[in-house]
Each structure stands twice: as structure tokens, then as C-alpha cells.
Length: 304
Image (cartoon, rainbow, N blue to C red; front, side, top):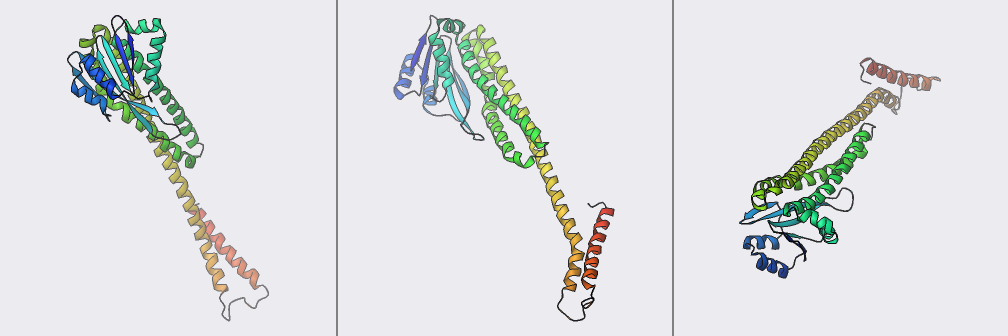
């Protein structure tokens, strides 16, 4: 637990808080038992509650795992926000929180820039770091979508099947994490200014709008990758059907020659041309002509 103070604001940052840390918070800030319970238990969904003079907000943070195509790791960031103090509780796997705290602690100018404008400005700086990292990931996804589209129309549909699935999974994971937080940011925008002061509104509006933009980008990417997947499957089906059609035509063309060859290969007496000096040439010619006739018939019907 680390504490950063100014004349008007105190920020308590808990990295992997212990039971003693949470007990100290309850005693120091007179937190509601429901808040203490939420701090102790992991949450699977975003949550925001207003308790008198402070707000409790639980954010779900998408973190990309190492390795292409793997699912996102979802981490929790709990913020307790009042006019004169701010508490952040999280795990050590959210480095952007500790980095921003260290930035404020290491520079009096940075600290004054955020602290003098109140807790909403600090939250703005904190969450903006998250949004920037998510936006970077979405830019990478956009680049991947462009590559997929180019490869599909270069005739490499088979190679794109797994890549499309991995990209779609990443988009869905981001969207599934970020979209439910729309209600949280809207409620924060409604309740925040009355508790944190009118100067909090621009910061909270910016966060709400930035979050909405990220969700809109993800929805567009989801629709795009779905359309590309459908196109890819259509092209694969067309190629498969063309291959099956070619094999069927080849089988049909060879049917007559094979039948004739089987007849002349029958081991019985009195087979035509069996004793003729030109028998082999005659039978071969009949087989060739039957195959050629079938081929020309298919060509005339435009089946090949």
C-alpha cells in the first residue's frame, strides 16, 4: 500500500491488498461493509454504487495474454472515489496503474497537474492509460484485418481460416469485456459531478466518450471480420465445388473407356478382334474415341 497526498487530495494505491490493508481502509475512511466485501471478493462484471459521499466502481480490464490467438486475461480495478480522497485496489498484473502512480509520485509537476483538479482528473489520467493500450491493440487488430482481406483475395483462403478465428476471438473478448462498462461510465457521469464537483464533468465526459468510441470500433471490427469469414468460406466452398465437379467430369469421361476396356479384357472366347493382327490398335482407338466423344459432349453442354 502506498499513499500520495496533496493539500486537497489523498490517493491510496493498493497493489494486491492484504486483509490488514483492507481493515485499515475501513477504519480510516469508514467504508460501507458492502464495499469491504466487494474489495475482498473478485467480481466478474462491472459495478458502480454510490454510498453517501463516495462512489465505488469496479472496472473489468482486458489484458492480452502472451502468444498469438490466446484469450484475453480479465483483471479487476476497484476505485473508491470521494471529493478529497481516492482509493485504487488492483493486482500486480495491472502495471499501468502503478506506472501512473509512480509518475505522480516522482514528479511534483505531474502530481500538481492532476491533484489540483481533483480526483476526476486523476481517474482521467489513470483510465486514459488503459484506453491508450486498448486502442493500440485495436490498431493491431485493424492491421490484421487488412492483411486477412488481402490474403483472401490472393487465393490463400485455406491459410486464413485459423487466423480469422483467432482475430475474431480477440475482438469478441475485448467487446465482451468493454461493452458492459457502458452503464458504469454513464452512471459515473451522472453521479460524479454532484459528489466530486462541477469541474469533474469534463473529465468524466471524456472517459465516457472515449469508452464509447472503443466499443464502436470493436463493433465495426466484429462486423468486418464476420463478413470476411463469410467471404472466405464462400470462396473455399466455390473452390471445393469446382474440384468436385472436375473429378466428377473426369470420372464420367473415363466411364465409357473403362467399360469398353473391361469388356475386351474379359477372359472368354470369341472376343472381337482378339485374333486380329490390328486388334490392339482397333480396341485402343475405340476406347480413345469413346472418351473423346464424352469429353466433346460435356464441352458442348458447357459442363467443363
